[in-house]
Amino acid sequence: MISFILIALTMLTLFPKSVLAAWTPLISVADFDGIKVDVLSTSAGIVAVLLIIVGIGLLVRVLGR
Image (cartoon, rainbow, N blue to C red; front, side, top):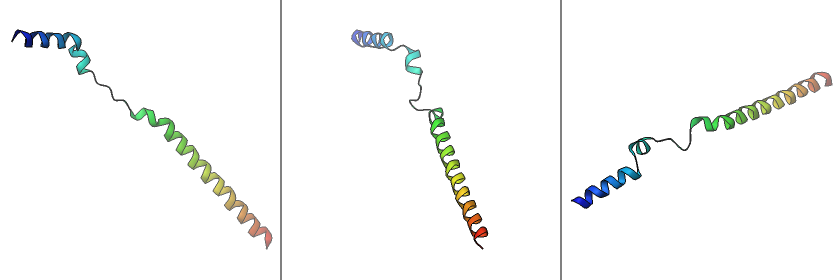
């Protein structure tokens, strides 16, 4: 019985309650903000290039007649 009490007291000194109660996730949502910005800027760039190509195609078709 005394050994159990000593083990319990040792564990409480090695791992205080504040350490056991505090938990932080390894990954948070804010970690992906950079990826989100990159994807949005890439998709905006692709749409801009497609609009330019379509505009040039329309100009060629109108001026070719």
